[in-house]
Length: 288
Image (cartoon, rainbow, N blue to C red; front, side, top):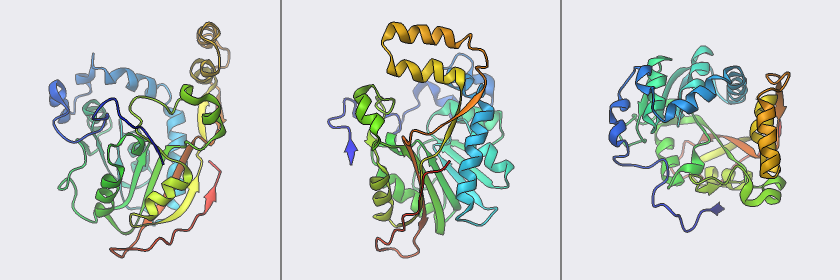
């Protein structure tokens, strides 16, 4: 398992405690106008510009999950962000709930999308045991100071036989080895770097049976690729030229599939026994 040690900060982006400070009012707000001038708004604007691409990604994830559970059911998105995945899931027939520690994200989800989203970290009494048929966590577990504690907390609120889907950056790729510290995975708030093997073992050792491993395809606009990805491989002056050119790129809104296998998703089922054995089944799927 690859992880940060020592950590420059004692706490990551996601931690338990009084983390909201001046943003405390956003924890319960359902007024999107409260986000005006807030630092989270810039990220929201960027995501709204890629709404169609996000829906395509979310529909693909839901189709994969549907292979292993009955529909419809109750679904919790752990680290739900602004609620875009939950919005797509609800339209597909799911009874949805979300939790995210960033209060501005929850404000938008509650106010603009009318979703039942809690702005907080997951606590012992947040949800009752066996509340959900499915739990999802997209790009969350790499941020957590104690991933095992969070996984066990999620197992408690997942119904016996329920399904969990965890997506994280994949450390075990040639591109990571080639780019080293310049790779996009290595940012200040990533603490854990899973591979497909360590993610499967992580789930198997904590009461889950692994059902499926996949490397999801992303759909990105040509403009986004030119502005955000190509500069990672180029010297700074050349990168700035590409970024400027990307804004004027003809056909820049064309959507292209990208799969570098640098993201991994594992779907697993909660074992009914309190002390299950490691009986994982690796159904490896490299598709979208």
